[in-house]
Length: 349
Ligand code: OGA
Ligand code: NI
Image (cartoon, rainbow, N blue to C red; front, top):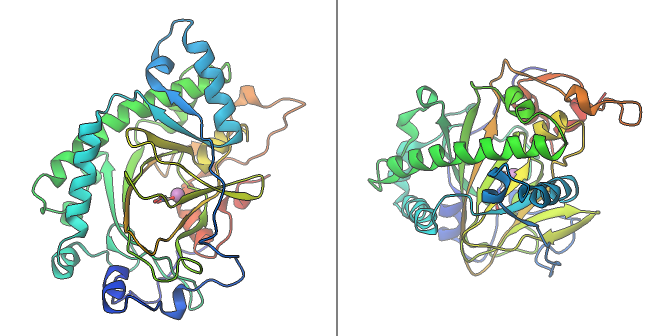
């Protein structure tokens, strides 16, 4: 498939739209036939996992490994606690994110995304005339490896933004290793099996999501249903405002907030590596008519030349190989994503 071609840049951000007209939403954001999005939804009891316990090689980690395997194979996500990042640090990150989005438009637009590329501030790519738009502005930045950072997109205001974000990515990298090793151990694999495929050239990419107040939460989504194209995604939720929903057993559930936790979910590439044992959950974001919401998602993504495939030991007669070998899954992913299709279709055998 050819690279997607972006039709038009959005001249106006959602934040500006919301400020100009606080009572109406342009047609292009309205979704019909999805049911009332502001209805009340049941709460998902996302399992809480203690990363400190996972990291210890003693027998005490056994129960936690079982819990991890079971969570990732049914919910596809966990609330990670005891991850080694202090609540004070998480609050600092939330605060610089808030300060950035609170800057005047002209200031933020210095970091605007360029047409056809993903990094920078603004809307997601629009790939067709009939694409229904999401009620969000985002700042997308490559964090790692450091020589892939494009600093012109990195806010200089607030002043501490860059330093805090670099510290955050260093801390997340430690967590990622603990987690990938634990995921392998939980399936009785040698602990480096997933880490090896993930590779040492992998990237971490941050998506700061800003969801303005929306006058039509019944018919507008913050982010349309999708599963992540990453191996793993680590989400720092807003401390007070919910909005994330996960699809489980064909029903949407609200993901509760645990302020000091990181919500970690399986991405499509971990589903492939685990031959379908771990589930990459479909999720979406609903909007809110009273409060804005800010989140920071970090996607952990192998280098585009890295081949990803089901681990050999997980394939046998009762569990035949489900997925092909894939490379540069993320490019593939975006071509499907903006059409509202599940990119995993492309990897299925
Ligand atoms: C994402 C995402 C969820 C949220 O950025 O991929 O699913 O709550 N974000 O912002
Ligand atoms: Ni997502």
